[in-house]
Image (tube, rainbow, N blue to C red; front, side):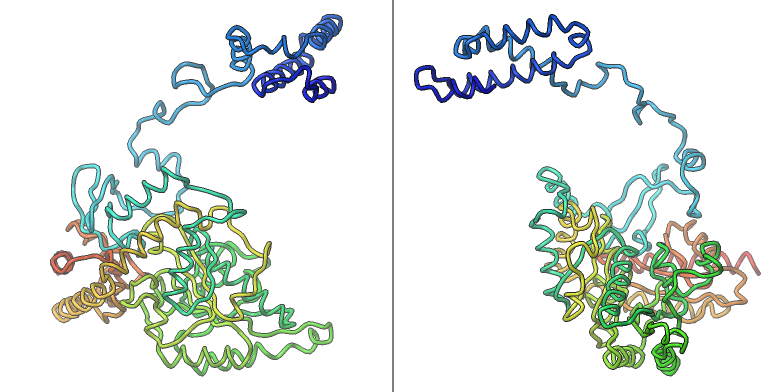
Length: 521
Protein backbone atom coordinates (compact mmCIF):
# COMPACT_ATOMS: atom_id res chain seq x y z
CA UNK A 1 0.00 0.00 0.00
CA UNK A 2 2.89 2.36 0.81
CA UNK A 3 4.52 1.47 -2.46
CA UNK A 4 1.30 2.20 -4.30
CA UNK A 5 0.94 5.60 -2.65
CA UNK A 6 4.44 6.50 -3.74
CA UNK A 7 3.66 5.37 -7.28
CA UNK A 8 0.57 7.54 -7.35
CA UNK A 9 2.69 10.61 -6.75
CA UNK A 10 5.27 9.59 -9.36
CA UNK A 11 4.80 11.71 -12.47
CA UNK A 12 6.47 9.04 -14.57
CA UNK A 13 3.86 6.39 -13.70
CA UNK A 14 0.54 8.15 -13.01
CA UNK A 15 -2.70 6.24 -12.28
CA UNK A 16 -6.11 7.31 -13.34
CA UNK A 17 -8.75 7.72 -10.63
CA UNK A 18 -10.47 4.60 -12.00
CA UNK A 19 -7.25 2.59 -11.69
CA UNK A 20 -6.73 3.82 -8.12
CA UNK A 21 -10.31 2.89 -7.19
CA UNK A 22 -9.87 -0.56 -8.74
CA UNK A 23 -6.60 -1.10 -6.89
CA UNK A 24 -8.14 -0.36 -3.50
CA UNK A 25 -11.08 -2.66 -4.19
CA UNK A 26 -8.60 -5.47 -4.98
CA UNK A 27 -6.64 -4.77 -1.80
CA UNK A 28 -9.89 -5.13 0.16
CA UNK A 29 -10.56 -8.35 -1.72
CA UNK A 30 -7.11 -9.68 -0.81
CA UNK A 31 -7.60 -8.87 2.86
CA UNK A 32 -10.83 -10.88 2.91
CA UNK A 33 -8.99 -13.84 1.35
CA UNK A 34 -6.04 -13.55 3.71
CA UNK A 35 -8.20 -13.78 6.80
CA UNK A 36 -10.63 -16.40 5.50
CA UNK A 37 -10.71 -19.85 7.08
CA UNK A 38 -9.37 -21.44 3.92
CA UNK A 39 -6.28 -19.23 3.55
CA UNK A 40 -5.39 -19.31 7.25
CA UNK A 41 -5.12 -23.10 6.96
CA UNK A 42 -2.72 -22.75 4.03
CA UNK A 43 -0.17 -20.12 5.02
CA UNK A 44 2.20 -20.95 2.18
CA UNK A 45 -0.44 -20.16 -0.43
CA UNK A 46 -1.18 -16.92 1.41
CA UNK A 47 2.43 -15.79 1.09
CA UNK A 48 2.47 -16.63 -2.59
CA UNK A 49 -0.69 -14.63 -3.25
CA UNK A 50 0.70 -11.60 -1.39
CA UNK A 51 3.94 -11.79 -3.28
CA UNK A 52 2.23 -11.92 -6.65
CA UNK A 53 -0.12 -9.08 -5.78
CA UNK A 54 2.64 -6.75 -4.62
CA UNK A 55 4.86 -7.59 -7.61
CA UNK A 56 2.24 -6.53 -10.13
CA UNK A 57 2.61 -3.00 -11.43
CA UNK A 58 -0.55 -1.08 -10.51
CA UNK A 59 -0.66 0.57 -13.93
CA UNK A 60 -0.68 -2.84 -15.60
CA UNK A 61 -2.53 -4.89 -13.02
CA UNK A 62 -5.40 -2.43 -12.75
CA UNK A 63 -5.95 -1.66 -16.39
CA UNK A 64 -9.33 -0.16 -17.23
CA UNK A 65 -9.87 -2.71 -19.97
CA UNK A 66 -13.24 -4.44 -20.08
CA UNK A 67 -11.72 -7.75 -18.98
CA UNK A 68 -10.20 -6.28 -15.84
CA UNK A 69 -13.37 -4.39 -15.03
CA UNK A 70 -15.43 -7.52 -15.33
CA UNK A 71 -13.18 -9.40 -12.90
CA UNK A 72 -13.44 -6.71 -10.24
CA UNK A 73 -17.18 -6.39 -10.75
CA UNK A 74 -17.62 -10.15 -10.37
CA UNK A 75 -15.55 -10.21 -7.20
CA UNK A 76 -17.49 -7.27 -5.80
CA UNK A 77 -20.78 -9.06 -6.42
CA UNK A 78 -19.61 -12.10 -4.51
CA UNK A 79 -18.10 -10.20 -1.60
CA UNK A 80 -20.82 -7.63 -1.01
CA UNK A 81 -24.19 -9.31 -0.46
CA UNK A 82 -27.42 -7.85 -1.82
CA UNK A 83 -31.05 -8.30 -0.77
CA UNK A 84 -32.51 -11.12 -2.86
CA UNK A 85 -35.94 -11.10 -4.41
CA UNK A 86 -38.80 -12.58 -2.32
CA UNK A 87 -39.10 -16.34 -2.67
CA UNK A 88 -35.59 -16.87 -4.10
CA UNK A 89 -33.87 -17.97 -0.87
CA UNK A 90 -34.65 -20.12 2.12
CA UNK A 91 -35.12 -18.26 5.40
CA UNK A 92 -36.02 -19.28 8.94
CA UNK A 93 -38.41 -16.34 9.24
CA UNK A 94 -42.09 -16.86 8.49
CA UNK A 95 -43.59 -13.91 6.54
CA UNK A 96 -46.83 -12.48 7.97
CA UNK A 97 -48.60 -13.46 4.74
CA UNK A 98 -47.82 -17.14 5.41
CA UNK A 99 -49.00 -17.20 9.03
CA UNK A 100 -52.27 -18.40 10.50
CA UNK A 101 -55.24 -16.79 8.76
CA UNK A 102 -57.62 -17.17 11.69
CA UNK A 103 -60.19 -14.47 12.36
CA UNK A 104 -58.96 -11.19 13.79
CA UNK A 105 -60.83 -11.82 17.03
CA UNK A 106 -59.22 -15.27 17.42
CA UNK A 107 -55.74 -13.85 16.86
CA UNK A 108 -56.40 -11.13 19.42
CA UNK A 109 -57.52 -13.80 21.86
CA UNK A 110 -54.38 -15.89 21.41
CA UNK A 111 -51.70 -13.32 20.61
CA UNK A 112 -52.56 -9.83 21.89
CA UNK A 113 -52.15 -8.85 25.53
CA UNK A 114 -55.56 -8.29 27.07
CA UNK A 115 -55.10 -4.76 28.36
CA UNK A 116 -58.36 -3.59 26.78
CA UNK A 117 -61.96 -4.69 27.04
CA UNK A 118 -62.90 -4.76 23.37
CA UNK A 119 -66.33 -4.72 21.78
CA UNK A 120 -66.92 -7.55 19.25
CA UNK A 121 -66.46 -5.40 16.15
CA UNK A 122 -63.58 -5.43 13.65
CA UNK A 123 -63.20 -2.21 11.66
CA UNK A 124 -61.52 -2.35 8.28
CA UNK A 125 -62.11 1.07 6.71
CA UNK A 126 -63.50 4.52 7.28
CA UNK A 127 -64.35 7.79 5.62
CA UNK A 128 -65.21 11.08 7.27
CA UNK A 129 -67.32 10.35 10.36
CA UNK A 130 -68.17 6.79 9.33
CA UNK A 131 -66.38 3.51 10.12
CA UNK A 132 -67.09 0.24 8.30
CA UNK A 133 -66.65 -3.19 9.86
CA UNK A 134 -65.59 -6.46 8.24
CA UNK A 135 -69.22 -7.35 7.46
CA UNK A 136 -69.79 -4.11 5.56
CA UNK A 137 -71.89 -2.45 8.26
CA UNK A 138 -71.41 1.31 8.72
CA UNK A 139 -71.21 3.05 12.08
CA UNK A 140 -71.45 6.77 12.82
CA UNK A 141 -68.24 7.41 14.72
CA UNK A 142 -68.67 9.71 17.72
CA UNK A 143 -65.56 8.31 19.42
CA UNK A 144 -62.98 9.35 16.78
CA UNK A 145 -60.28 7.23 18.35
CA UNK A 146 -61.15 8.87 21.71
CA UNK A 147 -60.82 12.49 20.61
CA UNK A 148 -57.95 11.69 18.25
CA UNK A 149 -59.17 11.61 14.62
CA UNK A 150 -59.89 15.33 14.46
CA UNK A 151 -60.28 15.34 10.68
CA UNK A 152 -62.21 12.09 10.60
CA UNK A 153 -61.10 9.04 8.63
CA UNK A 154 -59.31 9.00 5.30
CA UNK A 155 -59.05 12.78 5.14
CA UNK A 156 -57.56 13.63 1.76
CA UNK A 157 -55.23 16.38 3.03
CA UNK A 158 -53.87 14.27 5.87
CA UNK A 159 -53.48 11.17 3.70
CA UNK A 160 -51.66 13.14 1.02
CA UNK A 161 -49.28 14.77 3.51
CA UNK A 162 -48.32 11.43 5.05
CA UNK A 163 -47.93 9.70 1.68
CA UNK A 164 -45.75 12.48 0.29
CA UNK A 165 -43.56 12.52 3.36
CA UNK A 166 -42.99 8.77 3.14
CA UNK A 167 -41.64 9.32 -0.37
CA UNK A 168 -39.04 11.77 0.97
CA UNK A 169 -37.82 10.77 4.45
CA UNK A 170 -39.95 9.44 7.29
CA UNK A 171 -37.50 9.34 10.20
CA UNK A 172 -34.30 11.15 11.08
CA UNK A 173 -32.60 11.19 14.46
CA UNK A 174 -32.99 14.29 16.61
CA UNK A 175 -29.24 14.68 16.26
CA UNK A 176 -30.10 16.66 13.13
CA UNK A 177 -32.49 19.41 12.01
CA UNK A 178 -35.66 18.58 10.08
CA UNK A 179 -37.91 21.23 8.49
CA UNK A 180 -41.23 19.77 9.62
CA UNK A 181 -40.40 19.77 13.32
CA UNK A 182 -39.29 23.40 13.17
CA UNK A 183 -42.44 24.41 11.26
CA UNK A 184 -44.81 22.58 13.60
CA UNK A 185 -43.13 24.06 16.68
CA UNK A 186 -43.46 27.48 15.11
CA UNK A 187 -47.18 26.95 14.45
CA UNK A 188 -47.85 25.72 17.99
CA UNK A 189 -46.01 28.64 19.57
CA UNK A 190 -47.46 31.22 17.19
CA UNK A 191 -50.98 30.08 18.08
CA UNK A 192 -50.54 29.93 21.84
CA UNK A 193 -48.73 31.55 24.75
CA UNK A 194 -45.79 29.14 24.35
CA UNK A 195 -42.23 30.01 23.39
CA UNK A 196 -40.84 26.53 22.76
CA UNK A 197 -42.05 22.99 22.08
CA UNK A 198 -40.67 19.52 22.85
CA UNK A 199 -41.96 16.60 20.76
CA UNK A 200 -42.64 13.02 21.76
CA UNK A 201 -45.14 10.30 20.80
CA UNK A 202 -48.16 10.36 23.11
CA UNK A 203 -50.09 12.19 25.79
CA UNK A 204 -48.47 10.20 28.58
CA UNK A 205 -45.01 11.07 27.25
CA UNK A 206 -45.84 14.76 26.94
CA UNK A 207 -47.06 14.74 30.55
CA UNK A 208 -43.92 12.86 31.61
CA UNK A 209 -41.89 15.64 30.03
CA UNK A 210 -43.90 18.25 31.93
CA UNK A 211 -43.40 16.37 35.22
CA UNK A 212 -39.64 16.14 34.65
CA UNK A 213 -39.50 19.82 33.73
CA UNK A 214 -41.37 20.78 36.91
CA UNK A 215 -39.00 18.75 39.08
CA UNK A 216 -35.90 20.19 37.41
CA UNK A 217 -37.29 23.72 37.76
CA UNK A 218 -37.95 23.14 41.46
CA UNK A 219 -34.51 21.64 41.95
CA UNK A 220 -32.98 24.74 40.39
CA UNK A 221 -34.76 26.73 43.11
CA UNK A 222 -33.19 24.63 45.85
CA UNK A 223 -36.20 22.37 46.50
CA UNK A 224 -34.99 18.84 47.22
CA UNK A 225 -38.47 17.38 47.77
CA UNK A 226 -40.64 18.80 44.96
CA UNK A 227 -44.37 18.09 45.05
CA UNK A 228 -46.77 18.29 42.11
CA UNK A 229 -50.43 18.88 42.92
CA UNK A 230 -53.04 17.23 40.70
CA UNK A 231 -56.80 16.86 41.00
CA UNK A 232 -58.92 14.04 42.28
CA UNK A 233 -60.54 12.13 39.41
CA UNK A 234 -57.93 13.42 37.00
CA UNK A 235 -56.26 11.36 34.29
CA UNK A 236 -52.76 12.04 32.99
CA UNK A 237 -51.54 8.78 31.45
CA UNK A 238 -50.50 5.17 32.02
CA UNK A 239 -46.76 5.40 32.67
CA UNK A 240 -45.68 4.99 36.28
CA UNK A 241 -45.27 8.72 36.89
CA UNK A 242 -48.35 9.85 34.97
CA UNK A 243 -50.59 7.19 36.48
CA UNK A 244 -49.37 8.38 39.89
CA UNK A 245 -50.31 11.91 38.86
CA UNK A 246 -53.74 10.50 37.98
CA UNK A 247 -55.93 11.10 41.04
CA UNK A 248 -57.90 7.85 40.77
CA UNK A 249 -56.84 5.06 43.18
CA UNK A 250 -58.30 2.35 40.94
CA UNK A 251 -55.46 2.95 38.48
CA UNK A 252 -52.84 2.59 41.23
CA UNK A 253 -53.88 -0.85 42.42
CA UNK A 254 -51.09 -3.39 41.99
CA UNK A 255 -48.41 -0.90 40.97
CA UNK A 256 -47.20 0.36 44.35
CA UNK A 257 -43.89 -0.20 46.14
CA UNK A 258 -44.39 -0.62 49.87
CA UNK A 259 -47.89 0.76 49.40
CA UNK A 260 -46.61 3.89 47.64
CA UNK A 261 -46.70 5.06 44.06
CA UNK A 262 -44.06 7.48 42.74
CA UNK A 263 -43.39 9.97 45.51
CA UNK A 264 -43.96 13.69 45.11
CA UNK A 265 -47.64 13.88 44.14
CA UNK A 266 -50.61 15.17 46.16
CA UNK A 267 -54.28 15.42 45.20
CA UNK A 268 -56.91 18.08 45.75
CA UNK A 269 -60.63 18.28 44.89
CA UNK A 270 -61.18 19.72 41.41
CA UNK A 271 -62.56 23.28 41.35
CA UNK A 272 -62.21 23.71 45.16
CA UNK A 273 -60.19 26.90 45.66
CA UNK A 274 -59.93 26.75 49.46
CA UNK A 275 -58.74 23.14 49.51
CA UNK A 276 -56.09 24.00 46.94
CA UNK A 277 -54.83 26.97 48.96
CA UNK A 278 -54.63 24.87 52.12
CA UNK A 279 -52.69 22.10 50.38
CA UNK A 280 -50.16 24.53 48.92
CA UNK A 281 -49.56 26.02 52.36
CA UNK A 282 -49.08 22.56 53.87
CA UNK A 283 -46.63 21.38 51.22
CA UNK A 284 -44.48 24.48 51.55
CA UNK A 285 -43.77 23.68 55.20
CA UNK A 286 -40.82 21.28 55.37
CA UNK A 287 -41.05 18.74 58.23
CA UNK A 288 -38.58 19.59 60.99
CA UNK A 289 -36.57 16.38 60.69
CA UNK A 290 -36.19 16.82 56.96
CA UNK A 291 -35.13 20.43 57.39
CA UNK A 292 -32.41 19.38 59.85
CA UNK A 293 -31.14 16.94 57.24
CA UNK A 294 -30.81 19.79 54.75
CA UNK A 295 -33.90 18.96 52.76
CA UNK A 296 -36.53 21.41 51.56
CA UNK A 297 -40.08 20.61 50.50
CA UNK A 298 -42.10 22.84 48.20
CA UNK A 299 -44.71 22.98 45.45
CA UNK A 300 -43.09 22.31 42.10
CA UNK A 301 -46.26 22.62 40.03
CA UNK A 302 -50.03 22.55 39.95
CA UNK A 303 -51.01 20.24 37.11
CA UNK A 304 -54.65 20.30 35.96
CA UNK A 305 -56.83 19.38 33.00
CA UNK A 306 -58.87 22.41 31.84
CA UNK A 307 -61.70 19.92 31.47
CA UNK A 308 -61.54 16.50 33.10
CA UNK A 309 -62.20 13.93 30.38
CA UNK A 310 -61.84 10.47 31.91
CA UNK A 311 -63.04 11.96 35.18
CA UNK A 312 -66.55 12.51 33.81
CA UNK A 313 -66.45 15.49 31.40
CA UNK A 314 -66.12 18.15 34.11
CA UNK A 315 -65.01 21.62 32.97
CA UNK A 316 -62.78 23.66 35.22
CA UNK A 317 -63.99 26.99 36.61
CA UNK A 318 -62.46 30.37 35.92
CA UNK A 319 -62.15 31.00 39.66
CA UNK A 320 -60.27 27.75 40.33
CA UNK A 321 -57.74 28.24 37.56
CA UNK A 322 -57.23 31.90 38.46
CA UNK A 323 -56.45 30.80 42.01
CA UNK A 324 -54.05 28.13 40.74
CA UNK A 325 -52.29 30.72 38.57
CA UNK A 326 -51.85 33.10 41.51
CA UNK A 327 -50.63 30.36 43.85
CA UNK A 328 -48.00 29.34 41.32
CA UNK A 329 -46.88 32.94 40.83
CA UNK A 330 -46.66 33.56 44.59
CA UNK A 331 -44.68 30.39 45.25
CA UNK A 332 -42.40 30.16 42.21
CA UNK A 333 -44.19 27.04 40.98
CA UNK A 334 -45.34 26.16 37.46
CA UNK A 335 -48.92 25.95 36.27
CA UNK A 336 -49.26 22.96 33.94
CA UNK A 337 -52.34 22.32 31.82
CA UNK A 338 -52.92 18.83 30.45
CA UNK A 339 -54.49 19.54 27.04
CA UNK A 340 -54.11 16.02 25.66
CA UNK A 341 -57.85 15.46 25.17
CA UNK A 342 -59.39 18.93 25.22
CA UNK A 343 -56.70 20.69 23.19
CA UNK A 344 -56.27 21.14 19.42
CA UNK A 345 -59.70 22.67 18.95
CA UNK A 346 -62.04 20.24 20.67
CA UNK A 347 -63.32 22.82 23.15
CA UNK A 348 -64.16 25.36 20.44
CA UNK A 349 -60.95 27.27 21.05
CA UNK A 350 -57.57 25.88 20.04
CA UNK A 351 -56.59 25.28 23.68
CA UNK A 352 -58.85 24.43 26.58
CA UNK A 353 -57.15 26.87 28.95
CA UNK A 354 -58.34 29.68 26.67
CA UNK A 355 -61.87 28.86 27.86
CA UNK A 356 -60.68 29.73 31.38
CA UNK A 357 -58.84 32.99 30.58
CA UNK A 358 -55.57 31.71 32.01
CA UNK A 359 -52.07 31.22 30.61
CA UNK A 360 -50.13 28.20 31.90
CA UNK A 361 -46.35 28.00 32.08
CA UNK A 362 -46.48 24.56 30.49
CA UNK A 363 -49.17 22.70 28.57
CA UNK A 364 -49.25 19.36 26.81
CA UNK A 365 -50.87 18.01 23.67
CA UNK A 366 -51.28 14.73 21.76
CA UNK A 367 -54.33 12.85 20.40
CA UNK A 368 -55.74 15.26 17.77
CA UNK A 369 -52.33 16.87 17.20
CA UNK A 370 -51.51 14.26 14.55
CA UNK A 371 -55.08 13.45 13.56
CA UNK A 372 -54.47 9.79 14.46
CA UNK A 373 -50.74 9.60 13.71
CA UNK A 374 -48.84 9.21 17.02
CA UNK A 375 -47.32 12.50 18.16
CA UNK A 376 -47.20 14.40 21.43
CA UNK A 377 -45.85 17.77 22.42
CA UNK A 378 -45.02 19.75 25.54
CA UNK A 379 -45.09 23.52 25.17
CA UNK A 380 -43.56 25.98 27.62
CA UNK A 381 -43.23 29.74 27.95
CA UNK A 382 -40.95 32.18 29.69
CA UNK A 383 -38.61 30.75 32.32
CA UNK A 384 -40.09 27.27 31.87
CA UNK A 385 -39.02 27.28 28.22
CA UNK A 386 -35.35 27.34 29.24
CA UNK A 387 -35.27 24.67 31.96
CA UNK A 388 -34.16 21.72 29.81
CA UNK A 389 -30.77 21.57 28.16
CA UNK A 390 -29.12 18.97 25.89
CA UNK A 391 -29.35 15.55 27.50
CA UNK A 392 -32.02 16.48 30.06
CA UNK A 393 -34.83 14.85 28.08
CA UNK A 394 -35.18 13.09 24.74
CA UNK A 395 -37.37 10.96 22.49
CA UNK A 396 -36.19 8.74 19.64
CA UNK A 397 -39.29 9.18 17.49
CA UNK A 398 -40.36 12.55 18.87
CA UNK A 399 -41.04 15.07 16.13
CA UNK A 400 -39.85 12.88 13.29
CA UNK A 401 -40.67 13.97 9.71
CA UNK A 402 -43.63 11.62 9.30
CA UNK A 403 -45.36 12.61 12.54
CA UNK A 404 -44.73 16.30 11.94
CA UNK A 405 -46.09 16.06 8.38
CA UNK A 406 -49.31 14.79 9.94
CA UNK A 407 -49.27 17.53 12.59
CA UNK A 408 -48.73 20.22 9.97
CA UNK A 409 -51.55 18.84 7.82
CA UNK A 410 -53.93 18.97 10.79
CA UNK A 411 -52.75 22.48 11.67
CA UNK A 412 -53.21 23.67 8.08
CA UNK A 413 -56.69 22.14 7.86
CA UNK A 414 -57.84 23.66 11.16
CA UNK A 415 -56.54 27.04 10.06
CA UNK A 416 -57.78 27.10 6.46
CA UNK A 417 -61.24 25.52 6.95
CA UNK A 418 -62.40 27.50 10.00
CA UNK A 419 -62.85 24.24 11.89
CA UNK A 420 -63.05 25.97 15.29
CA UNK A 421 -66.27 27.67 14.21
CA UNK A 422 -67.71 24.32 13.19
CA UNK A 423 -66.77 22.92 16.61
CA UNK A 424 -68.57 25.75 18.37
CA UNK A 425 -71.75 25.53 16.26
CA UNK A 426 -71.96 21.74 16.17
CA UNK A 427 -71.11 21.63 19.86
CA UNK A 428 -74.05 23.86 20.70
CA UNK A 429 -76.28 21.73 18.48
CA UNK A 430 -75.13 18.54 20.23
CA UNK A 431 -75.57 20.03 23.71
CA UNK A 432 -79.09 21.28 22.93
CA UNK A 433 -80.07 17.91 21.49
CA UNK A 434 -78.78 16.02 24.53
CA UNK A 435 -80.67 18.40 26.82
CA UNK A 436 -83.90 17.66 24.94
CA UNK A 437 -83.37 13.90 25.19
CA UNK A 438 -82.61 14.24 28.90
CA UNK A 439 -85.96 15.97 29.44
CA UNK A 440 -87.76 13.12 27.69
CA UNK A 441 -85.96 10.43 29.70
CA UNK A 442 -85.37 11.96 33.16
CA UNK A 443 -85.34 8.53 34.83
CA UNK A 444 -82.24 7.53 32.85
CA UNK A 445 -80.27 10.68 32.01
CA UNK A 446 -78.95 13.40 34.28
CA UNK A 447 -76.76 16.45 33.71
CA UNK A 448 -75.32 17.27 30.30
CA UNK A 449 -71.93 19.01 30.41
CA UNK A 450 -68.81 19.82 28.42
CA UNK A 451 -67.36 22.22 25.85
CA UNK A 452 -67.48 22.20 22.07
CA UNK A 453 -67.38 18.66 20.74
CA UNK A 454 -66.34 17.12 24.04
CA UNK A 455 -69.72 16.46 25.64
CA UNK A 456 -70.99 14.04 28.25
CA UNK A 457 -74.35 13.08 29.65
CA UNK A 458 -74.60 11.54 33.12
CA UNK A 459 -76.46 8.27 33.74
CA UNK A 460 -78.51 8.36 36.92
CA UNK A 461 -77.63 5.93 39.72
CA UNK A 462 -81.06 4.29 39.60
CA UNK A 463 -81.26 4.15 35.78
CA UNK A 464 -80.74 0.41 35.80
CA UNK A 465 -77.74 0.53 33.48
CA UNK A 466 -74.15 1.77 33.36
CA UNK A 467 -72.62 4.10 30.83
CA UNK A 468 -70.79 1.17 29.21
CA UNK A 469 -74.08 -0.72 28.77
CA UNK A 470 -75.74 2.29 27.17
CA UNK A 471 -72.73 2.60 24.85
CA UNK A 472 -73.38 -1.01 23.83
CA UNK A 473 -77.03 -0.21 23.17
CA UNK A 474 -76.04 2.70 20.91
CA UNK A 475 -73.66 0.43 19.04
CA UNK A 476 -76.60 -1.78 18.05
CA UNK A 477 -78.09 1.35 16.44
CA UNK A 478 -74.91 1.96 14.47
CA UNK A 479 -73.60 4.74 16.73
CA UNK A 480 -70.17 4.61 18.38
CA UNK A 481 -69.87 6.33 21.76
CA UNK A 482 -67.44 5.92 24.68
CA UNK A 483 -67.89 5.95 28.44
CA UNK A 484 -66.12 8.50 30.64
CA UNK A 485 -66.08 6.66 33.93
CA UNK A 486 -68.90 4.37 35.10
CA UNK A 487 -71.73 6.88 34.79
CA UNK A 488 -71.09 9.26 31.89
CA UNK A 489 -71.57 8.66 28.16
CA UNK A 490 -69.10 10.69 26.13
CA UNK A 491 -69.63 12.23 22.67
CA UNK A 492 -66.35 13.10 20.88
CA UNK A 493 -66.96 13.10 17.09
CA UNK A 494 -64.42 14.30 14.52
CA UNK A 495 -64.19 18.09 14.48
CA UNK A 496 -65.45 18.15 10.89
CA UNK A 497 -68.80 16.55 11.80
CA UNK A 498 -71.80 17.95 9.92
CA UNK A 499 -75.20 19.19 11.09
CA UNK A 500 -76.94 16.16 9.59
CA UNK A 501 -74.52 13.77 11.28
CA UNK A 502 -75.12 15.37 14.69
CA UNK A 503 -78.88 15.03 14.19
CA UNK A 504 -78.42 11.42 13.09
CA UNK A 505 -76.33 10.64 16.18
CA UNK A 506 -78.92 12.18 18.50
CA UNK A 507 -81.69 10.13 16.87
CA UNK A 508 -79.73 6.90 17.22
CA UNK A 509 -78.86 7.66 20.84
CA UNK A 510 -82.48 8.31 21.69
CA UNK A 511 -83.48 5.08 19.98
CA UNK A 512 -80.99 3.20 22.15
CA UNK A 513 -82.45 4.76 25.32
CA UNK A 514 -85.97 4.04 24.15
CA UNK A 515 -85.08 0.37 23.66
CA UNK A 516 -83.42 0.23 27.06
CA UNK A 517 -86.43 1.76 28.81
CA UNK A 518 -88.79 -0.54 26.92
CA UNK A 519 -86.85 -3.62 28.01
CA UNK A 520 -86.87 -2.60 31.66
CA UNK A 521 -90.57 -1.69 31.81
